[in-house]
Image (tube, rainbow, N blue to C red; front, top):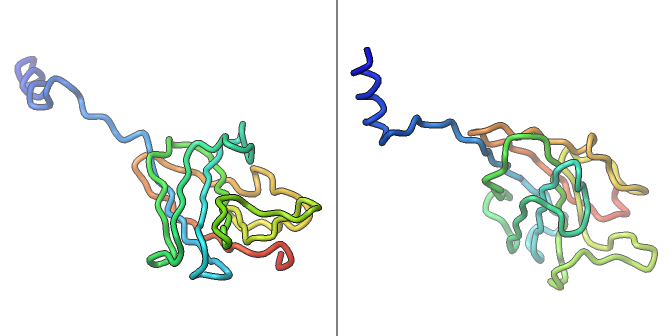
Length: 146
């Protein structure tokens, strides 16, 4: 029996293979203007939910997207929230009016209604499992359409 164990360890280069500890989120974005601007995606943990510059991962891509989807990979297993906005004018930021109301389309995982306040983490939580891809669909809207 010890010889078999040694043989197995040697065949793996002395290391026991580990299951992956990260997963991915595939985001299918439904944008009101699917051919305009850039889509920005941010993934947050609960502790830093919606804090500027505190996302654990993010991506951006020019629209239109192939099959409306983008993958965010290498996300450690756990609970997260996904926030998106469509930068229609190409200035690299979410534009707001003088009251602080967004003037470009935005959305969150689980598509909560967010007209008069930001969503809570619980409303937007997405569970990522190690070695798996979690697919979500997010409907981006202008503030007036929520």
